[in-house]
Length: 440
Image 1 (cartoon, rainbow, N blue to C red):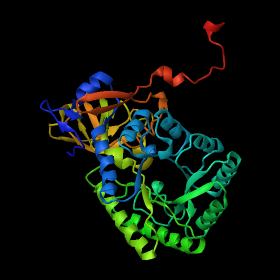
Image 2: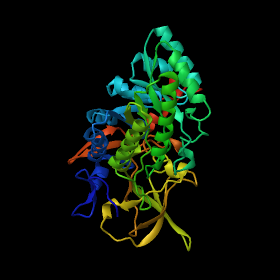
Image 3: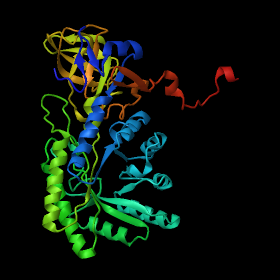
Image 4: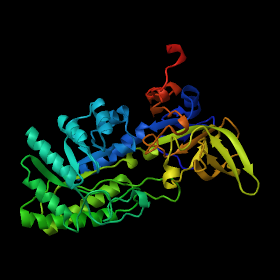
C-alpha cells in the first residue's frame, strides 16, 4: 500500500487524510466525494519555486489549471505565489472570480475565439501564448484597434516525442498545437509578430507531452529551441526574454510509475539552459514551467460506496461503486491505471482479486480492472488514489448523474469548496417544448 501526502491509517483502521478520518468525511458529505490534501499541493508548489529561488534563476511557475480549476483551487495557488495557465474563456473567468492577479495569467489554447482574446485583453492578462497564424492575425488587429500592447509567447513544436500515451503527445511535428520549428512556420510567425506595432514577443513556448518520468525530452527540446533562438538572434537581433518549457511532469499512479521529484526536473532544465546559452552566447532567459498534474494529481482521492457485485465463475468478480466515468473519465479515455483500498478496512489484508465497475450504462465504465482487496461488502468505502488531476475537470453528467462535491482537508479541518450537484441542477438550463399542466 502506497500512501500519499498526509494520508495515514489511524488506530481504528480507517484511512485518514489531512488529519481527518475518511469515514467521517463520507458520513458528512456522502459519496462519491473528491478529497484534496492541500498540504501536499502546497508542498509541491514550494518545491518547484524554491529550486529556482535557491539557484537564483528568474522564473515563473504557472499552475496548469486545466488539471483542476475551481475558485478555491486558484485562490490556493495565489496564496503560494504561483502564476496561472488558462486555456479557455471559462478558465479565465474562474481566475477572475478567484481574484487571481491578471498580470500572472498566461492564456493558452489552439483555437481561441475573438471573444476570448478580447476578454483576455480587457483584463490585461500577463501573456498570451500564440498558437497559430489565425490567432496571431486577430490579436494583431485587436492590439492596433485598441492601441494596447500585448505580451506573447510563440508556441512551437520542437519535434520531440515524450514516452507517453499517444493522445497526450503534443511536442512532435504532427500536432494540432503550435508552429513547427523545423519547416519555417515558427520563424514566419516570429517575423509577423515582430512587425506588429503593439505585440511584444517575450519568447518561445513548448510542451512535449504529459506524465513524463525523465528529463531527456525536456533537455532535447530546450537544445533545439535555443539553437533556433541563436539563429534568430543573429539574423533578426531578436533576444528572447522567456523560455517556457511547459509541463508534463509525471506522478505515481501505480507501482509501475517512477516519477522524479519536482526539484530534479527543474535542476536538469536549469543546468541545460545555462550550459547551452553560454555555448551559444545568448543571454540567460527567464525560465517558465507549467506543472498541473504534478501539483494536484496525487493530492486527490475519490471516495466511493460499494453497491452491487457480480461473480463470473472462473472469470472475474465485479464490484460496483456509486460513481465511475462521470467523475473519472481517464480509465475509459486513456486506459488509465489506479490503485485503491477499502478506506474503512485499510489494515485488512487483501484476499481476492476484483474489478471495480462504475454505475454508468456503458460497458467501458470500469475504474480498475484488477485490484487486490479484502473480501468486500456493500456499503464499504473504496478510496481511489491520485484522482486530483483531470477527475473533476473532466467530470460530466452522462446518464444524468450529478457531479460530486469537492472538499479540501488540511491540519484536521475540512472545507467544502464545490457543492454536490442536485437533480434540480441537472435540469436548470433545460427548456420545455410544451407548457406544463400547472401553467395552463
